[in-house]
Length: 224
Ligand SMILES: [Zn+2]
Ligand SMILES: [Zn+2]
Image 1 (tube, protein in one colour):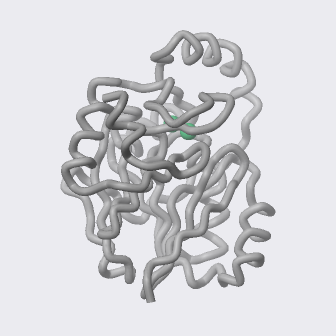
Image 2 (cartoon, helix red, strand yellow):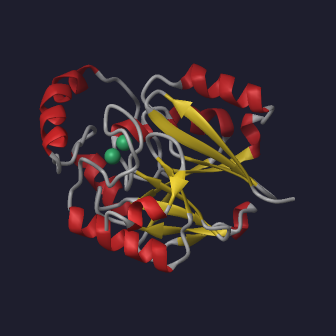
């Protein structure tokens, strides 16, 4: 059977369940998404215990906010790159600088709300390094690739089919943007572009962003 990809919206975070010979999940949802997660799995008729690995594309609050609950429910291992893990130990809610005028303005507008966010930091079972990780052991033909830029420890899940789950290396929805584009917030936008070139060279074709709907790689090639 070929690989199946199920988008699950957990708050403003677009998460994905990927199923082939095994089942994994990309990203851990916005804080407070426990019910949405449970309902989404029920609708897909996927049992929580089927998920054996949850890959956090990076350590920002909107992608890890419900990971602790998901880990508990599924018994899955949680993977995060060590650089973002280190950042989380220093500061639970980090938010990279705005790159575009709207990025700068919106960061100022939304930042005060962040102090109201409540969530538990997930336990990290697999600390990812720069060398990446094969997903064969989890029944998925693909690998995790270190793609820094949006955050130092951002990673991408790249399947052999060319499907790429990139977290916030790209955004494709409000309040960020109207069409697919590079992130409006980034630690280092030059590194984001460098990471995109790596992904393109490795065969990324269909992009599944951390916010918004999937799109084709051409949209990124146009802006690089
Ligand atoms: Zn982020
Ligand atoms: Zn995000």
